[in-house]
Length: 119
Image (cartoon, rainbow, N blue to C red; front, side, top):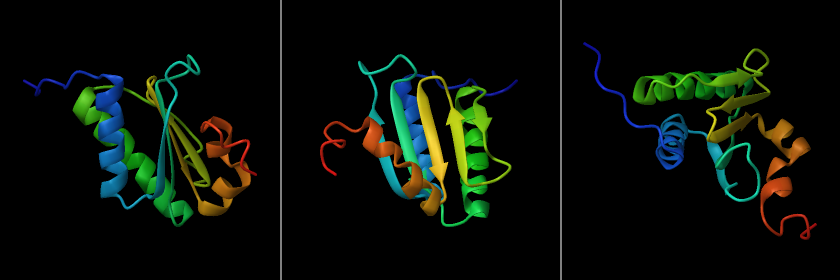
C-alpha cells in the first residue's frame, strides 16, 4: 500500500517548491503572492539555473518531488529547450529561467507591487 499523500494546500505546495529549488541550487529565487491579484494561482515563484541543463534538471526534480509528496500532476512547458520552463501546479506557478532569458522577460517587474514605477 502506498504511503498517504500530504494534503496539497497552496502554502504547502509553495513550501515544497522553495525547498526543492533550494536543494537543487536554484539562484535568485523570488516568491510573489498573487492572492487577490489574479485567479490563475496563489503564488508565483521565479528562479534561475546557471545553464540549460541545470534549468531542465531543477524542473524535472521539482515535478518528481511534487508528485511524490502531494500526488499532483503538474503542467510543464519548455523543458525541451531549457531556456525557460514553466511548471503549473494550479496554485503555484514556477518559472525556471536561464539568467539571460530571465533578464530579457523581466517577469518580476510585471507582478511585484511598485516594481513598474522603479525603472
